[in-house]
Length: 293
Image (cartoon, rainbow, N blue to C red; front, side, top):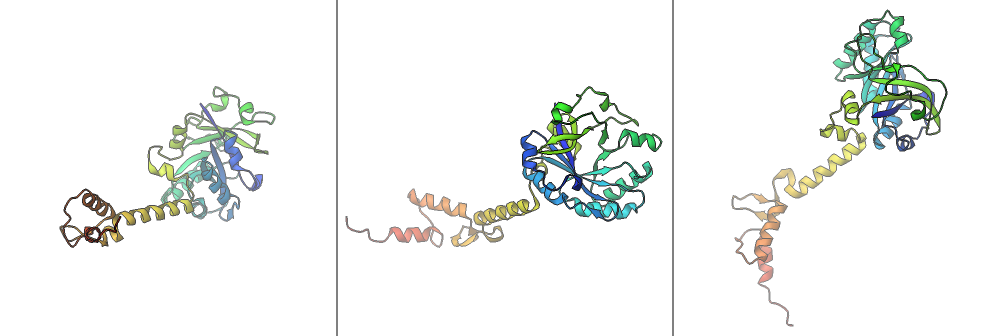
């Protein structure tokens, strides 16, 4: 199974319709978050939200620069990343492998985990072919000629594009920068595996609630939490202590809505309801004279 994704940034404009991207069969989006120690991509927040809203897995990346302090770059990236997997773009002007690991360590120290590493084979060779065996989620780029639909351009899972290097297997291949997607020409990527395997690569556990909530925006998660809290309070009463207007149980505690309904059921069935409880109201009503037929 092959899952296709796109790589976008401000260079592609802010008008790519990710709903259409999803309809065209893509499964994930890699979007630029920041670069160096001051550039923030203005298209990222909207693309991140749209990816989540349309069921696309999403990772945000930072273009690492060797001419900026690594700590400042990590802080900028984490500040603007939001609810997405984390990726480092390590290529031209990014420095040596020591700079790469310093950035990864800095990001991890801020409570986020780098999941993906874009390291083109040509850049790996340029910096002396260092060991990459411990690199998280290696993405490498080798481009086919021409433009068109990603699925038509993709050379296949058996292509040499997938050959590992630096002691690391390739996890994702970026195979073109001319894929026709939702009316735009963009970078296209391929993942040769299942959706669950891709989620695991991005640090998402398919069987957990976290994986589900990652598909919601911050506003949607806040709205969901508020609704759950309202339902809980209606069932259990304020602070879970029952509702005083529904009466008390044998232990003198306020009864919950469920308990009150159960008591009412018993009363309707003709069972005796103790005085001083929620059943008194219904019992009193039952003692009232019935209107003549």
